[in-house]
Length: 209
Ligand code: PRP
Image 1: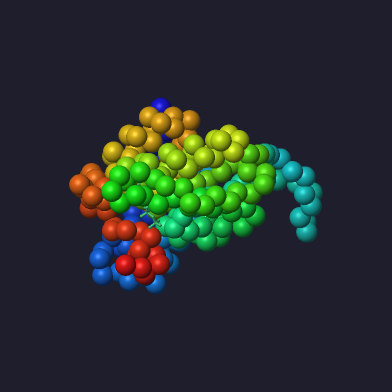
Image 2: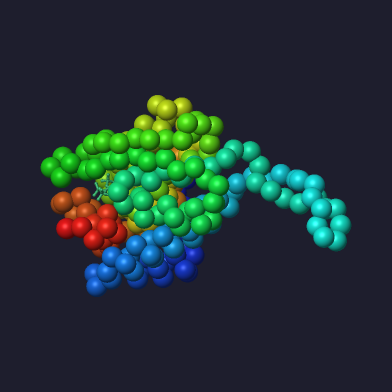
């Protein structure tokens, strides 16, 4: 079973509560989703391995620490995942960015793929999939399956809010992918919306609808 990390950092909790409010407009919503992306990235990279490196400071030689091993990639699920990308890149400027386009069929709630463009060496990278919402889990599961088909072996997923139904489906289908969420909400409603949730993150980020 995949590990699920609920990020209880006060800044993350505060910012999520802020953007849940219906009166928050697109400009603020977009800004704060990006900030949450930064903070979640900061927390989710806690386990990355370090290695020793010899450097010279203006004072003397020293053995310092730097990130070891694999390079990173951030992969947003379009559209709403785009809102978290800048925030992640603020923390990891050298990360490459891939894009997976999925939308949920409003009738079946099943994900439909419409775009996929990944860094050419994606299979050698440590991948962070980002999407603000984990509802039924269908989109995130489809993204993981797609990345596995492309040879990606190391991935983690970061979602700002999640429904218990989505967490259950994801951990059952993708037991090898660590899941980081900012808040675990109560349930899905009959339309597949997270309750209490924050509405449709894509529409709120881009001002559509
Ligand atoms: C939303 C959200 C996730 C997905 C979650 O995207 O951003 O990608 O739904 O639902 P699921 O867990 O049930 O698959 P949506 O399909 O509304 O597309 P958009 O981001 O383009 O608005």
